Image (tube, rainbow, N blue to C red):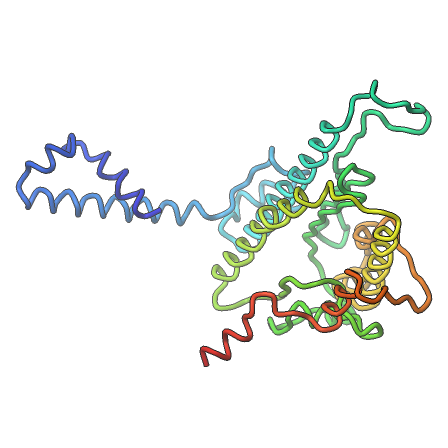
Length: 328
């Protein structure tokens, strides 16, 4: 980026004219041009750094921000405002990216005339869009719940944000951490099953170091990585064939997800212990369908058995631990 700024600065120097003229000038003037370009580049860099702050984009959000717009405008440099604007932006970007996949999936379907259908049973023009529910707590703050259901690609998708303020009771405070200390595999552990909820990822909360803005930039980079990381997987896998057996396994794994979220997840318990808790939003992440079987075990040498090995003994996918030992 800096190299491009330098080049652009050279192009904008009115006294340079062209590369030939610059080449024919004395060395002092050439150095002056370099210094001028460097100063211009630094000024542009400072402006770009300032532009990294979140700005209010009312037309792009899924709903009106929870905090009054006038207050956000007065406090744009405040970290609370920056965080609210960040999650508002990311929520909208993620929802529209998922809706775009649904739109494309329905466009790729055969036309109505290609089907022998019963109008009472099939929805010909599906509304695969997020239902937006903006809610306010009288105790302070509120949230925006976005849910898409029964789509061509996603059976259920939810993208929620909350900006809650007020006094927390002791039960809610106990669900919060004061240090960034747990890895994803440790947090998403289901003790009574001896397995993890999923194959991995990252997890952190209450991040406050090395500095406020450094933490904010880190959170921003994580949030902006979701779409370019997740959507390629969806596009690659959404048309894969599957059968009854795979569907039953999916429902069983969703059952494990339900167990973790209702028994162990701090976010769920935090919400339930919060005064005037909004249960529809808290429980929104639960799947439409799930399944439990008594003493279920996957078939030997099956893909499901291989997955269970990873869930019981999490894998270091990037060999980070091995790299650290080698470096030490």
